[in-house]
Image 1: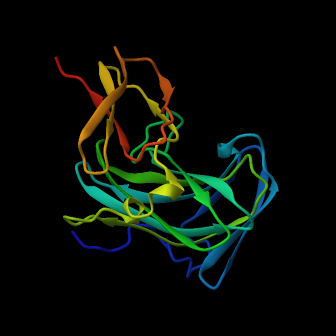
Image 2: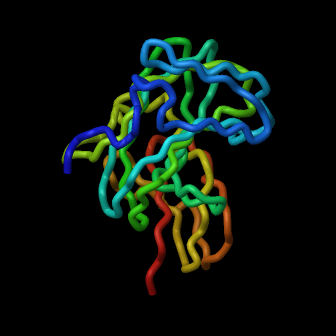
Length: 217
């Protein structure tokens, strides 16, 4: 597979082509200048998903990817980033992230493996609601990972909370497993019999990745 950027117009060289603003219960403006996009929050709403800026990407089952972006804010704030199925029923593909933005440009990156069936129209969503602080974004990319690729979040761990967001529990028995950055199982954080619906990822101050796995037999 090629190393091309799977995010359409991820450098914003074509303005807002390939991107869509969603104002669910708030209002914001987006303006592209010098291949970066600046967001002004006019009405923040109450929830992070009240305001969303979205694009679409194509994902293949069993393939590992590196997501990368650069962002900053007028003053420190958090931002939710998700790669998920584009439907009302929440199905995350990369586990949601809450990232801490500062007033300087910083790089945010992580690696994930697509565990679900192929999705040619997966949703890449930046959830900025619930906070009135403006922010900026540039150089958004999603590329197929090569062996040894880790993503810059493995070097800059403090700025990304890898345990944010929600997951939809499988219909079969499942376990929520917490892995170290080296890929070793640390502990099982939660489990269920199946069909419990939406559940929140627990918070932890340790760096690692949470994976929902079905338990066979």
